Amino acid sequence: MEHVLVTGGAGFIGSHFVKRILRAEDVEAVTVLDALTYAGHIENLGTAFLSEKLTFVQGNVLDAQLVDELVQRHTAVVHFAAESHVDRSFFAAGAFLATNVHGTHTLLDAAMRHGVEKFVHVSTDEVYGPLLTGTATEDAPLRPSVPYAASKAASDLVALSYHQTYGLPVCVTRSSNNYGPYQHPEKIIPLFLTRLQRGEPVTLHGRGEHVRNWLHVEDNCAGVEAVLRGGVPGEVYNLGGGTDLTSRELTDYLLRVCGASEEAVTYIPDRAANDLRYSIDWTKASAELGYRPERGLEDGLAETAEWYRRNPDRWAPLVRNPQAAQPPRAVPAEPRALPATPAGW
Image (cartoon, rainbow, N blue to C red; front, side):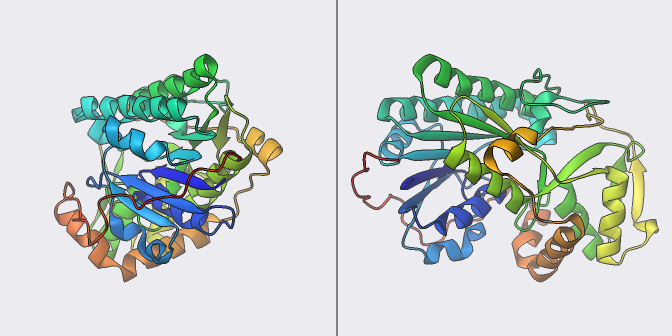
């Protein structure tokens, strides 16, 4: 595994993965392609820029010419780039379809032309839709209920079709809800942490009974790397194993780590299509790839809360203007020349 292209590598999960893969001795070069929209920030990569292995390119996965130029220089693609916020998808479904479906197709097409040796498409447990009981294995039907999840389900199917039709070595990962440092404050954990730290109230939809599995971002990235290295082409791998919590239980954890009282919580009517419960079975990734989540919830939430306490300069501008993307710093706009791609994986 020599040259890895990571799309969306300046986003929350992607930036954690980039820092992880840069530490691998068998990785010679990592290129990050990121559009730096409101949820992608070059600061997320931080110390990754100290590595001579890293190249950053600001660009969009819908730019077919740029994608083609980059993909041909890499042996592997790990595709994180996506529009990912459920509420935003209600009002901008077209943007979600464009990035998540057409952008994925653009990458797959380039990967097929240039003989990429591994393509990992990063997806979500939301494609399975709500499960009142039971747990979704990788062969469960896809029943997304909101535009975001539908766009991810469609992109999953397009990715897998490129394996079936063209033999492209594609794997798909589907993880449960991630949390950790650097996450945009529109998501529930950083939203609640930043509000509680400012002495502001937090709101729960309905009666706070919606169930999600919370997985530390580093555990998800470990699973993605395991799939990149050992995943069988054409296969899907669920990456779960965090902690199942209702939104009320999650809020209680956050109140404790912030030293806030019950009076900070208010309830509002539930939003449309708010799936009551997600649940995935991650036995396959464990048995076949040795995937094992290691980060406990209490320590993980405490660490995350501390990061938001110490870094208000990172999230305060986003609270004031959630749409704003931080401007890029002095980073080369063009990729530096990479050596010729070796024949072996």
